[in-house]
Figure 1 (cartoon, one colour):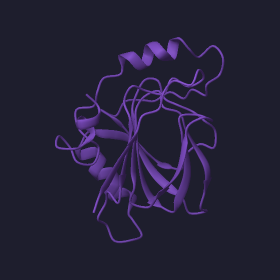
Figure 2 (cartoon, rainbow, N blue to C red; figure 1 turned 135 degrees about the vertical axis):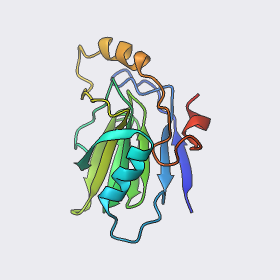
Figure 3 (tube, rainbow, N blue to C red; figure 1 turned 90 degrees about the vertical axis):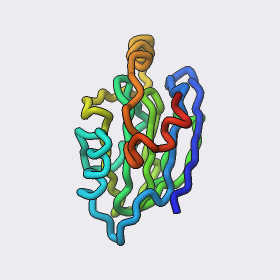
Length: 167
């Protein structure tokens, strides 16, 4: 059964974070273990979250100012920090999905040796990477304001809970 959590992270002076909450779907996929990243990529693509990549999560706080991001965990687990140093930390596991709005800082704070995820972006848009360095803002703040809402939830399409939280 899918459990849904949301976390609203405020601007901390370094990272802009977002007016939209991060959404976590626990146990989003019903695949037998180990999971197949191609299945996750197909689900994301059916909902027009493409330009996917398979990898992990950077070990540095970073954010994207020109696009939202979804991460689908297909192997292992990761301690994830959201919102910067003053943010929140929790563990994501195989079958979890994290929907990260543009501007929200995220960082791998430690992962199992087998941790892997699929990342994708609405409409297959490209992403930028910002690290909270002096001089990034206010340009990144302007970029974030221009990012449109996606047309579909990356997992559940037009009926997904994303739109209950991002309106």
